[in-house]
Length: 255
Length: 251
Ligand SMILES: Nc1ncnc2c1ncn2[C@@H]1O[C@H](COP(=O)(O)OP(=O)(O)OP(=O)(O)O)[C@@H](O)[C@H]1O
Ligand SMILES: [Mg+2]
Image (cartoon, rainbow over all chains, first blue to last red):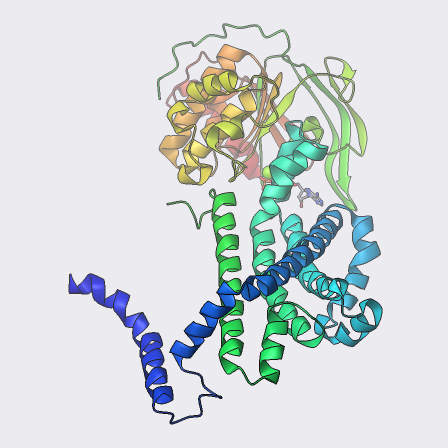
């Protein structure tokens, strides 16, 4: 029995211990609570943020920016990846340019984007879209190019062409690689959003953190940090779940 | 697997294709692979092609399948050029080429339209794998995967079945099972069969005619009229095998 429970307890010793030490440190005011708020204070602030509706007001817009940026950038990356994987001309025409743009860190565009879009929604969505586009593009392209040519020949022999060939062979064959790109893109999506929201915005989780900084509310800053961590984790879990569903056939998922 | 009960060709398949290759040349760049090769294959005939590695056997098969075009010369099916003929050729390869993301049944049904499930299930039953229909291909053994690939090729009711060393990756016992199965299905369905193999014993066991390809041309073309099923120990088969091997070794 011990053998089963102990491995479940061990990973939690450090996190829980940290919280306990943290509470003791701040309760005794060994460190200024303005710099390091007590866990209990953080919880109370969290409660107030939730009850006032303020938290959801900001979360809502952050999630919307992330999702819309992902859909636009991911969609474009996916379509370009497919097109360049299938058409030699399209590849020659666009790949070099895409690779050049890819080497610009998307956050370096912030000053320019602010000039273009001001601080409205377009700016954040644009930055996210640019950031997620490339990992999805590259992995989709890679996925399509790496499909066993024997499968395609076999498919054609059995009368598949056009859409049917794409649906039965090309897309499922590229899917494992596309998921790698998607999960990578999710990471970039959050990082882009975190930075973009602290620089130019009037609403969102990042804005919440910036105003908290001005008022020295370190408890709220901590909450926003934890929120971002949760967003990232949940997004990755959803992607993993989708991957497991879509790739049931894959060696790594067959039980 | 059941031993075939049907040992004489019971079916005349009207669709089975008659193939005529006339003075085929095939080169890849500078390299000439087939050189002025001519061959006639009767409808419903089981022709086996042997030859050293790199002699152009697969290339010949791919030409007949329409996957490559001859540099010069002409291939006709029932006296029509390949492009105009409506005959359905299917092909089996050394690797099964089952799509790992489709179940066994959906692999067999690949490219079928309409109400295909019944037909696919029946064909899977013919190769003895109906009970595996909902499994992923990767959970099957190599021999089972090849049987599924055979079912997938047969469900289209091919007028021509092309087999490019489909058994060479299998162990000896599984291979013998598969030889019997292929023979049985050929006898009962009557398609024209063109098999490439490295295994001369397999050739003499299955073939109506054995073709040896060397240096891009046919150097041996032997009829084999032995009654089926043939035992590997038949004196006439052993002699035929010896003759072919000697010819291969000489060059
Ligand atoms: N697409 C291609 N491009 C260039 N050369 C090719 C191509 N396909 C085949 N060849 C060449 O043609 C020759 C014959 O190849 P082929 O695959 O037909 O041989 P094979 O008799 O089937 O050999 P094996 O028994 O090893 O399968 C080889 O030298 C090969 O390198
Ligand atoms: Mg070959």
